[in-house]
Length: 312
Image (tube, rainbow, N blue to C red; front, side, top):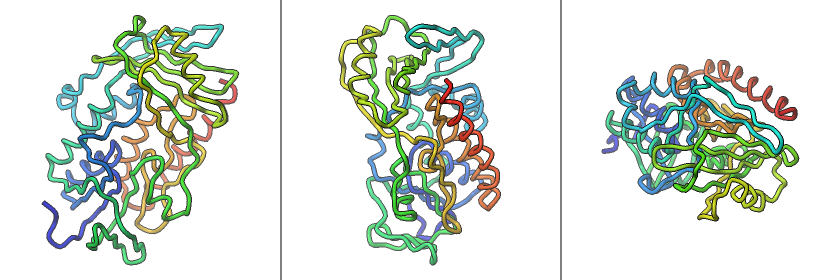
């Protein structure tokens, strides 16, 4: 049920991982929160390998509780492999985790709804007036104290505020049950500045390729990769990812960005789950200029990775 006065402490555009996590954390503080999501959430399925680094898994536990996340079916692994055409580097005692991304997104949505969060799905906003802190949805006006963009790499809110979408890369992915070698692996195509991944979870294996340079023919590369690891052609799906060189945390007073819509990603590994969780948690704790100030350290780290990826 929507708040009768249509006035919210926070309105979040986007009901994915970062948006629902932020909403959940704010509801725990008794804030009035509305999420506006353009898709039907039961049908929403984000392209994502589902790899959780140790820091991402620990953050997930801190936010949602150790017992609560057991239902996610997270698989843990003690080693991972980094490969290219000539070398294989085995990383032992490197704790990593894999989860089906659809399960993760459903999980955070359910937790947000359980704690009394409001949501308008399968809809977008009609117009926005940041000076009045007012947004119009389906012809009705909603007032807010804070507005948050969590609507993905092609954020409509970001586009409306700065006049363009962010710089993007492209990725392709398939799910398969036919994988014989189910080790967590990242494969670097050094001559083409791209990477492939193999991330197994309980149900199947996510196999994908991420485009780094923005110029190569990724479909041909993906077919070569599938052939190389002996995977027969399956139904592919693609999605755009942040590039990491176009980060926007705040544009106008009382308007913030988190997760993919902020452009947060590891330029080397493509890790975005950690940044989605971290930015949501930090903003829930610092709904002020402190959020941007503290996130500058993250921005600096991502810029370092943009530099070091040239040598990877």
